[in-house]
Image 1 (tube, helix red, strand yellow):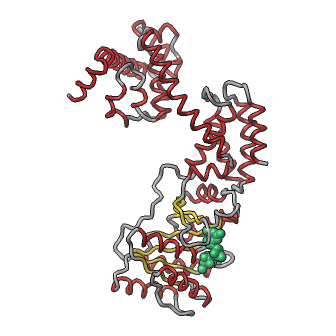
Image 2 (cartoon, protein in one colour):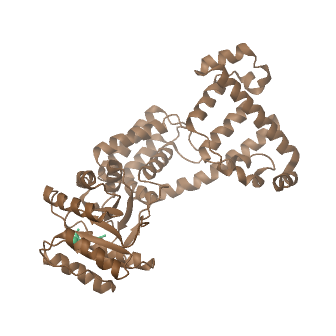
Image 3 (cartoon, helix red, strand yellow):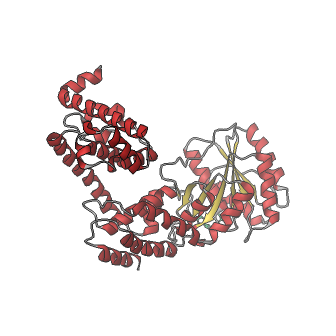
Length: 441
Ligand code: GDP
Ligand code: MG
C-alpha cells in the first residue's frame, strides 16, 4: 500500500542529516509512484518531480523531521502550490446582472447536478439565480433540472426539446432581466466524447451570452482522461475554472493536479456527493494531502515546523548576545526572512525588539537578491565575516570575482549590512520600553 511504501522510504532515509542528491532521488522515485497511482498524468508527474528535486537537494533538514519527512513536506508544499494554494478561487460575479455562469463538460460529468448545487449555494449567499436548461437533446435532461429546481424552490427557465440552445439562453437572459434574477446558471449539453458539433454550439453560447464564468465540470473518477478533455474544452472555450465532481468516491484526486497543471485554470469547487448541498470550495492543501494519502505524517510535519521556528529564534538570540551582529548573522537573517516570509519573525530574534515592529511585517526579499547576498557572503573568509572593517579594495575585488558579482554589488551589500548593524544596536540599546516609545513616534 501507499503508506507502507512511504514507510519504506522513511526507513531507508532515517538517520541521514542532510538532503543529498541520492536520498532525494530515492524518495522521489517513491513519490513518483504515489502520484502515478493517484492517477496524476505522467507528464505532469515528470515536471512536478523535477521541480521538487530542484527545491529539495541541499536543503537543510528540520531538526524534528527525518529526511524523508522533509522530502514529503516539500512535496506537499509544492503540490498545494501547484494546485493554487493562496490564490483566490472565488466565483467572479462582478458584472451587470443577470450574470451568466456557463457549465460545460462531458455527459455524466455532473453538470446538471452541479447547476443545482451552485444555485443553492448562491441563494444562500443572498443571490437570486435562474436555472437555464440549454441541454435540449434529451427530454430527460430538461426534466432533471426542473426536478432539481422544484426541490430547491429555485425557478427553472421554461425551455423545450429541439429549441436552439443559444435562443434559449438569450430568452432566459431577457426573462431574468425583467424578473429580477441576478445570476443565470446555464446547464449545457454534453456528449460521451468531445465532438466538434458540441464545441461549436458551446462557442455560440459563449459568444452570445459572454458568461462571466465558464466552469468546466470534470468527473474525478475519470482520472487521467480528464486531462485531455479539460485541455480541449479550455482551448475551444477558454474556461475560467474547474469543478471536480465525485470526490466523495475513492478517486485519489490526481485529476485535480493534472487538470490544474495542464490548463492552469483554478479548481473552484469540488462535488462531494449526489445531494444538493454537497458542493465545497476547493482546498489545495487538503487535496495535496489526499493525493499523498498521508494525513498523520503531514500533521506531524506541521507541528515540527512550529517548533523549529522557535528553536532557530532562540539560538540566534543567544548568539547575538554573545558575538554581536556579524555578516554571518546578517546572512542568516536574510535567509530566515525568505524562509518565514516576513520580517516579523526576524525581529523576534532581537532581544526585546520583537512585538513592537509589526509594521515591518510585510517586507519581502526577492529570490534573486537573496542568492546574490548568499554568494557574496559565502565568498568571504571567516575573518572577514566576523569583521567587515577589514574589507579593503582588493578583498572586495576578490569577493566579487569569487561570487560572480561586481564590486558595486559587494559595496551595496556591505552598506546594507552596516545599516542593519546600526539598527540592531539601536534596538538592543532601547530595550522593549524604548522601542514602544519609538514606534509611537
Ligand atoms: P451531466 O450529464 O454532466 O449533467 O451529469 P449529471 O449531473 O446528470 O450527473 C451524472 C451522475 O453523477 C448523476 O447520477 C449524479 O447524481 C452523479 N453526481 C454528480 N455529481 C456528483 C458528486 O459530486 N458525487 C457523486 N457521488 N455523484 C455525483
Ligand atoms: Mg445534464
